[in-house]
Image 1 (cartoon, rainbow, N blue to C red):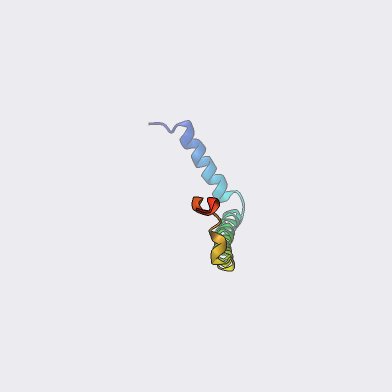
Image 2 (cartoon, rainbow, N blue to C red):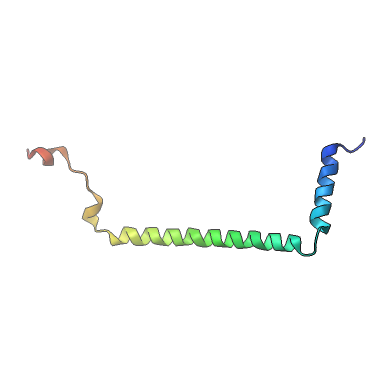
Length: 74
């Protein structure tokens, strides 16, 4: 069975990635790791801001809906 076009393209792509230049894979993986780290750091910052904003608001300010009997006075 002869290799098809997709198998040949895959082998060529892998060869270019592996032998295309010195340190290219290392730099790509380093950039990927930095992206994951900054993403996790952003998630932690968002969680911290949510907790602070919830504790800053008074308890009565959260319930802004008025009941129907309060509107009519009966």
